[in-house]
Image (tube, rainbow, N blue to C red; front, side, top):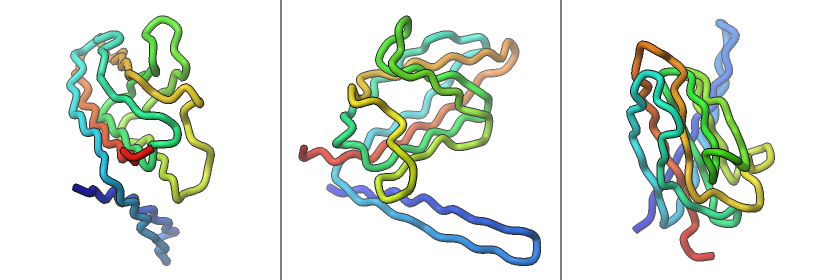
Length: 130
């Protein structure tokens, strides 16, 4: 089975709008919808892929959360995902891959908000053949 992930980017200045939709299709998909309780710390989510497999990643949270890769104590990367600002990367896009050559074996999320739960949506498209 194949999956297609599309990422639409739009620019506007009020008078004009420009936009493009870039799609990636491959046979592997990882999907998680995670609820982080208020003040939750280092909640583990099983997400595993190598740099060579990654084709697209999209993570969206309604609150600002911290994401650590591979280890809760000595992470390879620590990334802040800002509220309602998607963390994205696509193979066909610009920019370097946001993960080290070690790849990703697990993600750990923390919610510093002491009152509200965070809803984190994770979508990863991978090439399952390498």
